[in-house]
Amino acid sequence: MTPRTALGALHIGALLFGLTGVFGKLAVSASPAIIVFGRAAFAVLALGLFAQFMRQTWQPLKGADLHRLLLGGVLLAGHWVSFFIAVKVAGVAIATLGFASFPAFTVILEGLLFRERIRRNEMVLVVLVSIGLILVTPAFDLASEATSGLLWALLSGLLFSLLSLTNRAGGARLPAAQAALWQNLVVALCLLPFAAPGLADVRAVDWLWIGLLGVFCTGIAHSLFVAALAVIKARTAAVVFGMEPVYGIAVAWALFAERPSLTMLAGGALIVLAIILSSRLASEPASAAKPATQNS
Image (cartoon, rainbow, N blue to C red; front, side, top):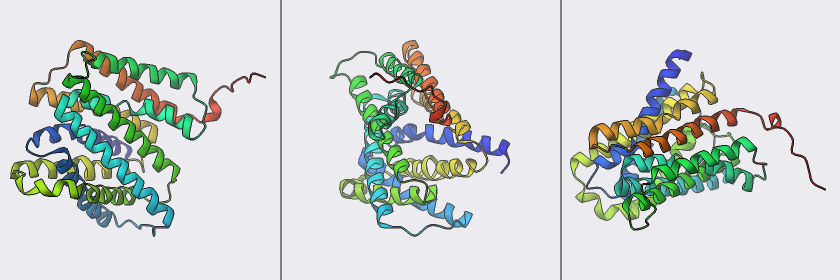
């Protein structure tokens, strides 16, 4: 894969990730539990085929790996369920932008959990996301669908941030595709008891959307991301994936007439800007920051 094709693969992956909320909304008769179960099950199949095709050598699992993958799978399940609840309640745009707040959660949680100093420019990131979320929400009324949907989306972003930190704490011993497959398997097992009673009532067309969600928006999108990272810098990849909310909102606008207001567009622009800034901050070594003066 050349750098040019890798960049194209990243944009396709970002588009597929951005369609997550769209496919979730299309599966109108399926509950969030069924959508997440189906997505994870189809993703396991897609990632397994990807691993066979790429002839990847996987590492044997140790006890610490199993604990981390189990925790990661539970966090991933909660992240997806809360995201699809947000989609059902408030629509694709608010759900996608609310979830996009996860870089701000990551900055705060990294400082707390890893005892890392939060730099001034990282606090700017948090402020940008906060202002963006205020603009995205039409009115702060807990009884309104927009507000409750945004709160579910924020929970989704928080759980995704915790998932990222869990994977960071475990290091990079396992290949990304292997870790993703096992975490998706945990998701499917976690959601099976909740999804099983309603599986027989899901329409065939909704299974089609769920299958596309699992194969394309999870398995293939993740595989493209992993393959492109062998050629493209992580910093570039993160900037490209900052386009994910833009793709999702644009497609939802075209399909469902979910036309965002000017204030929502302004808030979304601030959140996307924060995502791009966070990717640049992640590429800077901590030592590059100016040391803080200590008070005696």
